[in-house]
Length: 262
Ligand SMILES: C/C(=C\CNc1ncnc2c1ncn2[C@@H]1O[C@H](COP(=O)(O)O)[C@@H](O)[C@H]1O)CO
Image (cartoon, rainbow, N blue to C red; front, side):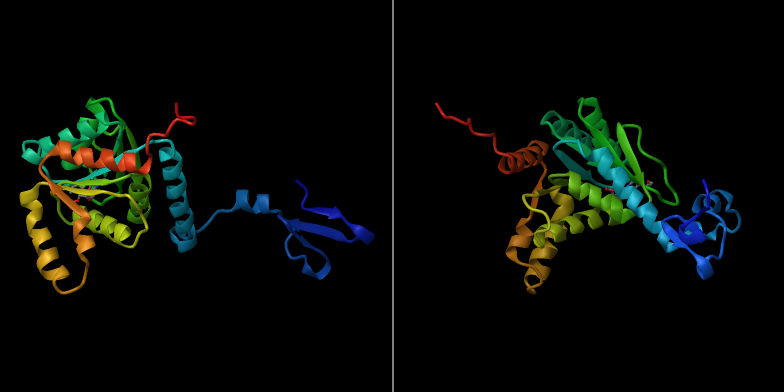
């Protein structure tokens, strides 16, 4: 590639990518390509914010590309610490399987515990078992039952994927991570950023304290409305949880009526 060409009136046109320099503006005889390929030296720029912006964009591009054709999906959340012999492991497995049989892809955080159980249920039932993992300092990697996984660096990019590609959330007992996911969903429904988005809490004994506090303190002191409390549907019955998701799907995409009724 030529860095300079004879331009009009015998003046040298010097090209720097899309920039042309002439006369007193010419400072450097190299091309953009040369500067890219020849550049060496300090590497600290890879840790700067503009470069991070590129990586953040890349996470969105990768996520949207990987999940665009997923079809109807439900996110299942729950504790990373739920042990294999805990009854909630079996419940998460059952919910994964039944959601898959109802035609939903199952999306989890791709980690251990309740996430692994839901992925296992979905995968063994022949459904789409998706894991949206997160890079953590003590990361264990995606669980063995994730059939399609993406590992995110950034929580906020990962959270966008859960909401964009799920039609509802099933939430099993969990800690800070699960509560964060639950309250993010509640905020998005309350502010109508998402519509027709059921949130089911599985495990009434575990969740009753939270529901009572929301009703007796938060609602009683006017910080939320009755509608907000009613966004949360609590059950111990996996079939009921799945039925709520199926009903919301039918509400969202009713079976198309025949074009010309008989
Ligand atoms: C704690 C351990 C591993 C953590 N690994 C995780 N991998 C993927 N996603 C995770 C992980 N930990 C939390 N999450 C997300 O939060 C929810 C669970 O958090 P909780 O605090 O355990 O309730 C879960 O839904 C994930 O999306 C090693 O045991």
